[in-house]
Image 1 (tube, rainbow, N blue to C red):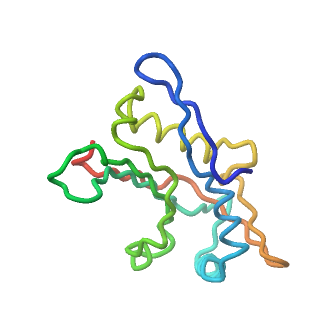
Image 2: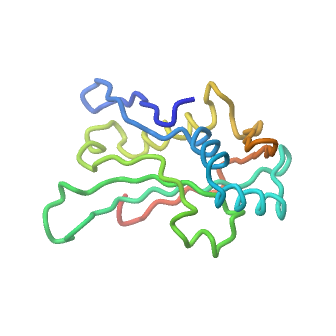
Length: 166
């Protein structure tokens, strides 16, 4: 599928607004195929702790509202960002930002126009992740790199959101 997909979110006025989100399965396939680092990281982590239908990896969805630049200046640059990773990448790797995938970025003032705000956007993202036309990680996502393949299963293990941002 496409790397970035627009989903329809309901606004407070009853209209719909298109919001771009990353298709995680497409991103993973591209990284697995084209990035030596990600290919080696994932194959190594999967060899140590293989995912399966019976024992899927535990995904982490992390939402945070950021204020780039001077915190005391205007709030027009405040932005919601939703990231994704897996617990199975070990705590040491999870502290490194290159092991987190950015799935959505939207300005806070746009989020405020959406019914239920970041909650609706999180729901839409999860629906796209687990009920996509191109497959679901619950049944396994097959990643290919030449003759190498890896079937990765995951479910949602944690949803984290910065408490001050809620």
